[in-house]
Length: 267
Ligand SMILES: [Zn+2]
Image (cartoon, rainbow, N blue to C red; front, side, top):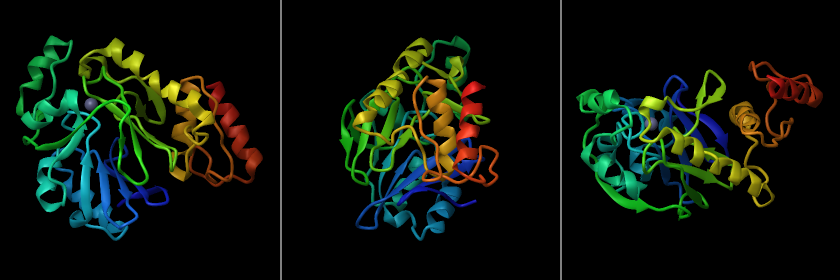
C-alpha cells in the first residue's frame, strides 16, 4: 500500500502495517510537508507513498516530528539530505534528543537502561525549527501545535483545522481499532500524558470554532468516532463523511451508519 487519502491533499503513509504512519500535506504550490518519519528503515515506504500521489522527496520542504522516539524520528536523518528541508521541526523540549539520536529518559529504570541500546536510537538528526505550544506552523493552511507532554517532554499533537485531522502522535494509541493510553514504560511521565491528552478533549470542546474536529473522512471516520466516544465527546458519522461500516463493508444507507455508531458507543 502506498498512501491513504484522508482529505484533499492530505495523506497517511503506513510505514509498518497501520501502526506507524507518516502524514503528508500537499501545499498550494505543490510542495509537500511531512509529519513523522517512521522507523529508521521506513524511508523506502515513504518514497513509495509519496510516489502514489505523484510526489518525491525533492518536493518535501518541511519535516515535522511529533516527538523524539525511534518510530517517529527514525528515518528523518536519512530523508533530509534528499529533501529541501534544512532540518526537522520539533518541539523545543524534544529537540536535543532528536539531535542526539536518543530518546528521553523514562520513569521506568529498565526502559531508561534499554534506551541506551542502539536499537532504541536513530541517526542523529538536525533540527532547524523548534516549536512551542499554541504555534501555528505554515503547513497546508495552518497546522496548530498543541503541547501534550508526558509520553515525552516535547510531545505535540497537531491539528489541521482545514481538514479536521488531529494527529495525536503517541499521546493516545489506536490499537486494533481501540483508543488506549500508551504503554506506561515508554512514557517519560505517564500521569502527565493522561492529563495532557485531555487537551484533545478541550480541542473538541472548542468544536464550535472547529466543528469538524472529531469526525473524519473515509478511512478516519471510525477511528475518530472511537476517539470521540473514548473521550466522552460528541461526534458525527454520516454518508457525507464516509460510506463504509467499521468492518470496512459498504453501508446500505445513512441509518446503517448511525446504527453502527450507536453500537460502537455502547461498547
Ligand atoms: Zn513514542
